Figure 1 (spheres, rainbow, N blue to C red):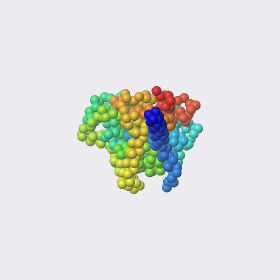
Figure 2: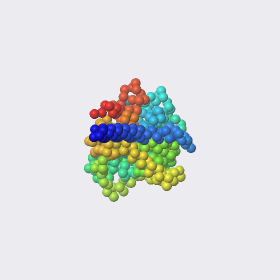
Figure 3: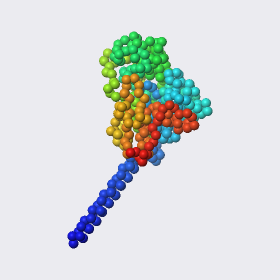
Figure 4: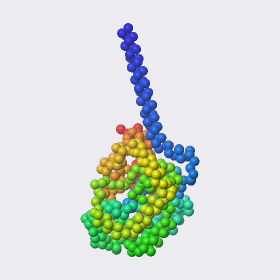
Length: 410
């Protein structure tokens, strides 16, 4: 009887172990599939549910400097890949479209043979509408983004400290703003474009122009004619919801991880006096920002409404949190020294410590590929997309991350 009892207990134990292993397998299977579904559901739902508008696929984004524009470039590059579109990429070995020269069509790779057959344009350029129109189709949607000039100048000072002579000659941003003309010389204005009215310059105008009311109004009017939408970096999530509605895009088309941001340790605190000085020193940018900040909120109230906006912003942040939990080790950005995959290291400039990301190591290939794209820095993504569009041409001088399989990991 004892032997029979032991055998019965052994059988029960084996059954229990098998049941446990089976449940573990199923849980792992569903967990893996749920991770894939996190990326797949959005496009499937977009195709399945009829929308009252047609998604816009011809888009030109004027990429201004230090305005969260690298994050938007990543959004647009992922959109390009997702829907098999064509991007107007910088020619040859460049990563910008001729900046700081005024844009001409030949700055685009293959323009002579391709003509107006590009869908997306979003690398840095100095806006020149007549030349951009040669590249982009007539039904192209034009948009850009602005940032509060006070925060913008501080960010530019740290990032371009070794580039702009006006910055490199001063001790810190407050010293620079105490007496900017002591450091800023018009004859060096090409090197100093980041030191005064940089957004005005990016839109194609003279950043050293006089603050004249009629002139400023004419530029504001012209900018409204040239661009269908101007976003505000200080309200980035709200901007993404407005962009989604305006382009008739899916939520996953505007989801993002913040790129090209810097560590808090490199932020310089502006004195109250310095903040006021920025408004005068960069008065053209300040008036540009004030005008389009007003039009931004007016557009939201007219098209979405503040209550719906809040609801959708919360939805975007929940979706972002889901993807961060899926993709990111530690679920946050890390300083450059802690980035493990150096192919995902962002370009570093000045005294800014530009943050990046580490991906989880247990991702299947499909999830890994999509997570990589969300964290891929600007130069690497430009290089990668160039290699896809022009496989027979010499690649750009920047390595991009290769997809690795879980079987290759140790």
